[in-house]
Image 1 (cartoon, rainbow, N blue to C red):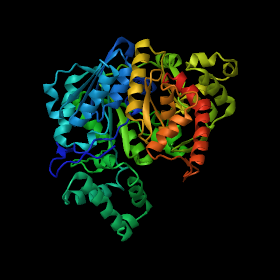
Image 2 (cartoon, helix red, strand yellow; image 1 turned 30 degrees about the horizontal axis):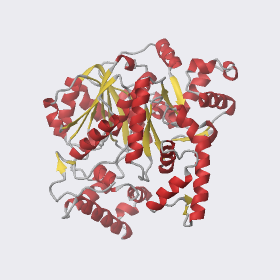
Image 3 (cartoon, helix red, strand yellow; image 1 turned 45 degrees about the vertical axis):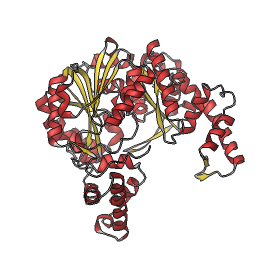
Image 4 (cartoon, rainbow, N blue to C red; image 1 turned 180 degrees about the vertical axis):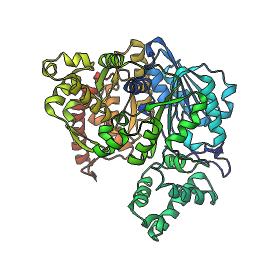
Length: 515
């Protein structure tokens, strides 16, 4: 993506950067189906999506999440708000090209929310907003939630978390303060700030020499896209939070903490050692317990779900709902290592338990009840199978799934075609929509080119078409970390990767309705 240049003094709005567009991306946790699964794991009643629902994304950025979820959910009504005009224009263009009628994009600030004619919402999501705006805008947000979130409604809220940010907050202050002192465009100021911090690191100042944490974090930061760095580090307002303080701020809006949006955070056994779990289990107060978890694991970003009086499920109702929930593999079973790395360490998958589960799900999405009907699993305790499914969910190998209606399949096909055309030569990993997952799957650049070949008539032998495209843009492949320079080596590697894609990835993408 190209930087958008803005003259000095014109790249802020309400303290938030508008002179540089935010990165394109889809965040799985914002999906209604994922939020519903997180509610179910916390014994809360999911929102019945098939009956129709309303969804609002405040600070939607490029709007790709909303367009994707709207394509997957023709029964939903989606609204998205952002005060970056370029973001809204791009999101509207994509919706128009795709033919989406259930996604509406509004160019507005948080102070202007009351002037927009909006319905009441079942879902309100905010990713990368709450820590990056000032207190006045946070008040507008809380008032919006108080007035426009339905009783029983669900809020997703991500924010920079303390104490996880404690070691790195001084670096952010250094970068931001230096950039503020410089003339020129925002791009120039960001680059100067990063270069200045690099000089300080080489000079051995205490900030970098007090330990490897800040040094390593700065080196990681330098690998990120500049537009992401600008939005993360260079807003005028930037406030990391303790979980307890966010709970306290949202309480007057009638909101209560429900749980985490990412599945691994529901599984203490995968995040904390046994001694740590024993201490956590002694803490009865839920807010204190969550805060204590943050002191134990020190995440830098929390992804929290709040609800406005969502009904609770009995244990029997929770089990019944989980047994009926379809789950789909998002990786091919053949390529999946029988292990996963979690905060607590590496977890090995017991082949007697996991192999039949993975083999069944590799055929098609299935419910727990369907899995338990298989001879290989019928003799096992259902509790063991449930535990394995929760581990696979936490390892991001599974996602909730549905039998998609025809309208969703058609809308997703149109959306993916538009995304493939728009991002044909974008070398970044980007998302396409799955009507089965009602969510996104990230794909590499070459994988997307191979998918595009299916619609060009080059699907039987995509290599010549892709190689012509690569030559036109001076793109080269790599093997074992080394860039391949000769045409012969590139063609050999291209054929090898195309064959692997055809045998391993393409069948999965077809099962998920992506192609």
